[in-house]
Amino acid sequence: MALAYQIDQTKKLVTITGDYAEPVEWRLLLEQVRADPRLQPGMAFLRDLRYSLHPVDAQTVIGIIAVVRELWTSVGARRAAMVTRPGIDVPAVIAHALAEVEQIPLRAFTSYDDAIAWLSEDSDT
Image 1 (cartoon, rainbow, N blue to C red):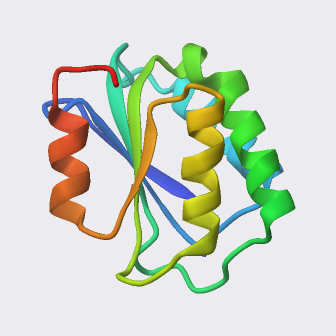
Image 2: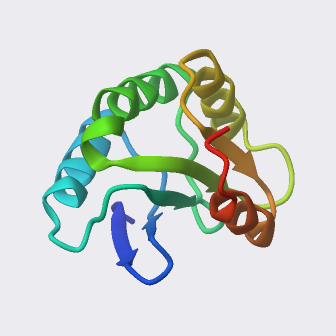
Image 3: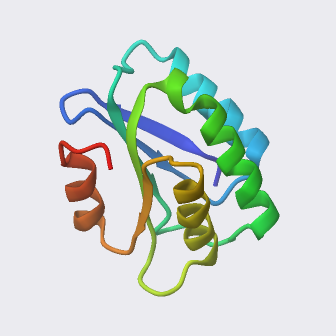
């Protein structure tokens, strides 16, 4: 299942769904989001991985984080969260760790409600 996104202007939330994807697909998706007239500065981004079935390897996660870092400012993201099924999701753990190193406010969660609560907080940390 390819990446797709929805923008909820009321919640100031961009939700990204679909299976795990390669950096090239992430670049295309984020460029589409950036060009979408509904996008507002300071929106939160939620990557919903609860229905994803084909995890990517560590090298692919590194490439995805590089794309996210490059396009972070241009999409006006305030925070980003990934929500996975309960259990260890290795790609999400790697992405969370790499985001910390890059000082990107991105966290991994196994609870949808916890992810939304964190995205809704006022702090940028």
